[in-house]
Length: 288
Image (cartoon, rainbow, N blue to C red):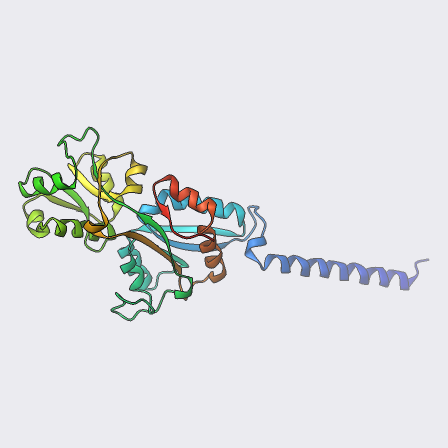
């Protein structure tokens, strides 16, 4: 005969045990960084907007971040910093923004000392830091058909209408750096474009493609893009010609994954991410 006290006592213990197990499971799953890596694991999606020139290096660094933080899934949106700034301004979901130009980041940062003409307050200034430095370079197609030597040679041959240059649009950082180079040589961009000596790309990758395909005689792109595309660099712009190319990173005030954004930004300061950036020609500026 079954002792009722043993039966109910055992049942209660079993139910309690199941309840504790269930509660323990839920508690562990609340932290995305500790979620499982299986197909059924629900991962927190971290949305990163980044300059197109970071495509190869940041994607690689992102893979390493996800391997170490399996509760997060990164979703990248690569484009010109000007386009990304506009998308963020218009309400696009974004947790982290990495801009190739200070101007685009400043425009979203109410605490920026300049360029915040529209009074936008989207960037979490406390998380902002300068992450990388790049270089502006003059590149040519395979074989350098027009035998372009350097920026001095570029300026002289643009004046004589001998060559076709590809550069970024005016809202693209690499285009803005190119405009400074043209101004340095006292060249009239509008007149050159009208005479068919300049063509444009909506971001640095488009300019790179035009040069790679031989559609133009030369182009002004970043050192990192030249490296990734295997293009020959014939000259590197000096600070006097176009200033420094410093990339800025920050999380957004309305980030859906605020903690994940901070975790990712800290990771980007570390040695693993820095190695990914250095491999393609960036100079890391921040350390964890």
